[in-house]
Length: 252
Image 1 (cartoon, rainbow, N blue to C red):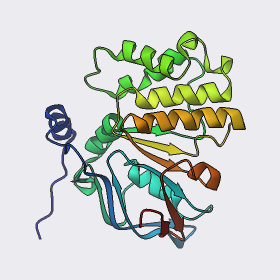
Image 2 (image 1 turned 135 degrees about the vertical axis):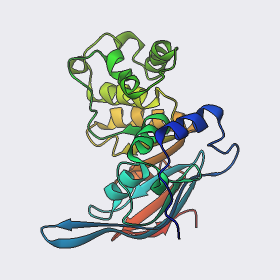
Image 3 (image 1 turned 60 degrees about the vertical axis):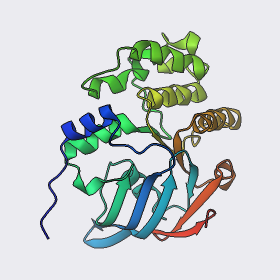
Image 4 (image 1 turned 30 degrees about the vertical axis):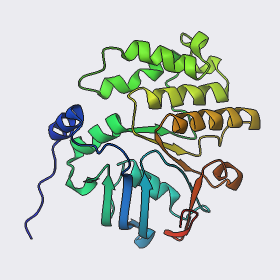
């Protein structure tokens, strides 16, 4: 079998610009076929993922749950194109990630995937607005309306009057809302949220979850990774991992 040449980032960008890369209507945003991820730690093999099969449709809201060590973080890293499977196949919007070179994978992360983490990752010396605009630094052709889009997003998450503040002047819930606005700046098709309420009080957590629900209602695919079953109940579908495998899928 002849090896497949990696798809360069320029090809990915050109396809995205013409919308030929993506499939309209109902299609699979994510397809995992017998995905394995094996690590070597202190000379020992660790099978973080052991044959995961998973399909998530465009526009779905799915919670990935499981105990510590079940493989949630490894799965999230693969879904976000931060890592690659040791074996198996991962398709995002119909394209095999294994075919992308590193630059193309980076381009997909920047253009098509938004990330929200438990730690907000806001730069303390920048204003809230400047933090929201950070993704533009990695974008070759930033949208001309990006600053206006950022202001609209801040208003949408309830921070319209806080755009000139520093992160230290915001509460934890407000910082997470700013991080969500940043994740949405480039209008990603897929939002990955990793324990987004882990550092928040119950009221702030509820506000953030409501906001994520609004994002999903707007048509974006949302994958929420959490160990909290009450949190997972907010999603219409739950996929539970155990020992690196899918132990339960409420859609099955």
